[in-house]
Image (cartoon, rainbow, N blue to C red; front, side):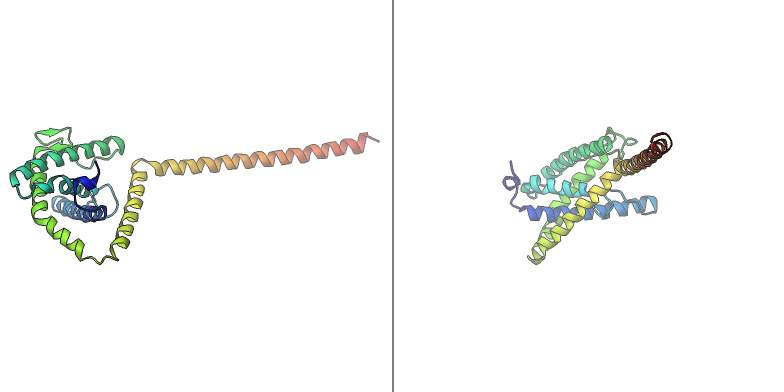
Length: 221
């Protein structure tokens, strides 16, 4: 089933929503971390000011739940279930495949493997419902205010930046930096060994040639 069958939005619009909500999520988490710890903390996986989990969470809400309209009770329950499932899957993937624990509810009551907590789930339900009913219409109107000739350029720059940022963050998280450095060092050491062998071979060849020359001069007519 394609996105076209699930929503009336174009892919370009969905990408715009993803960028905007990823940035909003980063702002929310940054402010929360600052109020909680009194210092700036980058709560995301990326280096830049984007939290894709908020962007994807918003897209899930927009694509699957916007059709519920303003049926707040149903919207709230659906948001709790969908976003909690998404949060669990995301937390599991980052912990087990990237070695990063982006959040940990292990010390909270009614949590599931530290990835999901009932308090956070209820908060996501409220936040998701509020975004769909109050925030998203405003964000959508902003999209239509952007000049049409600016949208492709902005989308291209944003996509390029996200790809580069995700690549750099993935390399760092998987420890590939050290592996790359070790590979270069091994290659350099191999080249040094090869260079020594080459010099030894040349010296041996020259020495052998001199010995043969001396033998020929002294012993052969």
